[in-house]
Length: 245
Image 1 (cartoon, rainbow, N blue to C red):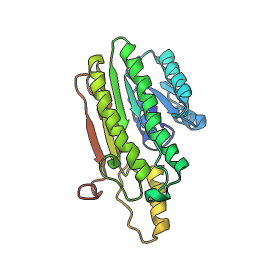
Image 2 (cartoon, helix red, strand yellow; image 1 turned 60 degrees about the horizontal axis):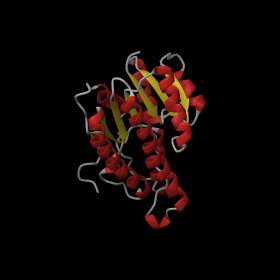
Image 3 (tube, rainbow, N blue to C red; image 1 turned 45 degrees about the horizontal axis):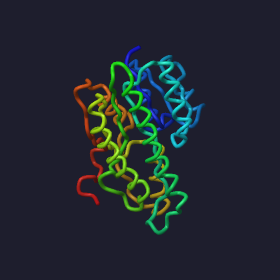
Image 4 (cartoon, rainbow, N blue to C red; image 1 turned 180 degrees about the horizontal axis):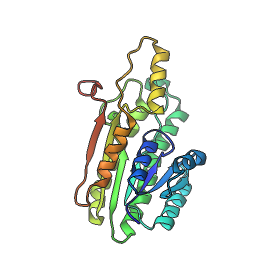
């Protein structure tokens, strides 16, 4: 059947670009997102795409999606744990608690659910093992101003990655994190729009093509079982990451 991967948040942005890279490379690709029609559009013309509509914050729906992928494909080699939300911008005292919980549910609980399901399947399949790649962020290391919700959750993902990496060793389950900066996606376009709304003269951040992020994920996923990228930072060359903060 060849190599297999599940990608969450596959309907747009980094997730969609990554799914296209893996499909073009001949992988079996399970694509998870809330919008079935967007997933079906992505899968059109790709007989190795498995459409799995589910919301990552719905643990039952997500479990059914993973079970369906296992039924159709038989094995899960890689999870790209990608689905995420930026949420509201502003200082902490201006953040609505309902909005805080929404970001926490997607970026932490949703990624936990997906990682748990992948780990469980990789542990019991034969041969045992696999790889989990968590989508972190530059905000897992240095925040943007006004990003308390997003930044807090991405620091949590760094802890999730390290723990899974440690706990996965006895079962040949590798775990790594990719921290992506300013790829040309809908999320970054929204951030730019917010910046321009606040200041029409704002200087927008340098951006890279989203395919560069997707290719970096493909590199991590394609390593042999005995090798792992624990952390990778890929970003636009001129982003003020080093020295910012």
